[in-house]
Image (cartoon, rainbow, N blue to C red; front, side, top):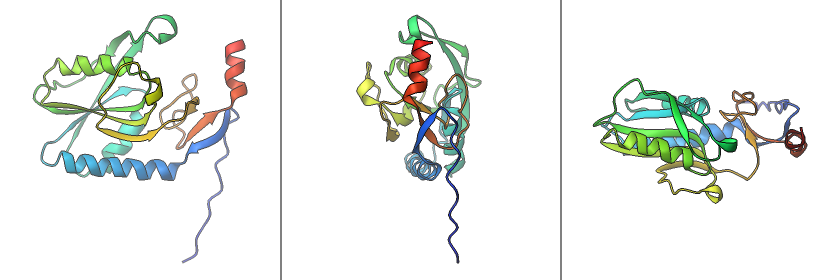
Length: 192
């Protein structure tokens, strides 16, 4: 059988380089799904993500899992100066009650932990049987609040990343890889 080499994707002009390619992403998602399948065998976990960024990871994770599970979504908005305050408001709540259920919060990226801490406490008050966190990307060096992570994909570099749910001005979320934005694009944004 002949090996076919696919061409490198044409990168959007704002992207310096691909940090995580589609192959590595898929392999890690399958690995996390297998671990969840083992840990939740017979428990029918309820996967919850925050729109819009976590949608891509949640979708791939759910498709890679082999045990029965359900999905739900939250939408939030951050407010305060530069949205770094961690103050959030839920704009779309869960469709189903989670009391007595095994819930996994599925996130695309964990930075300071402020927003996820709010979500975790909010869901914890609803009395799930268990509540765990699954993040695809982690930036532990930015953490302001300690969050217990049960499942993790990769430690992310201190770069502005786009693709696979991560956006730049609400664009580029649907890229099948994760790229690093060019420094000059970020400088132009700051100076603009």
